[in-house]
Length: 73
Image (cartoon, rainbow, N blue to C red):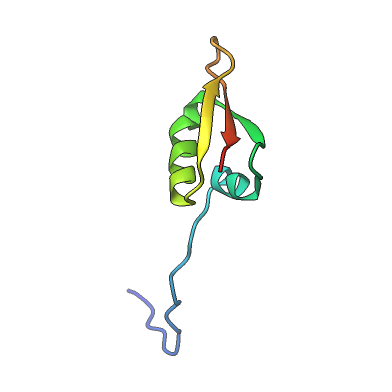
């Protein structure tokens, strides 16, 4: 059975969850860069789009597919 609670206010916009990549991109200045493992490539694109941040990505290690992400705008 569920517990009924009274008097709990509804949050304005809900809880916004930001991942580590998105928080890092938001702290970066134009020209800064980070190294991201290949498995987080899509996360980097999605985080940049969600924050309206322009990025450029280049693979820096052909074996591990590690990439460097620059903030461009």
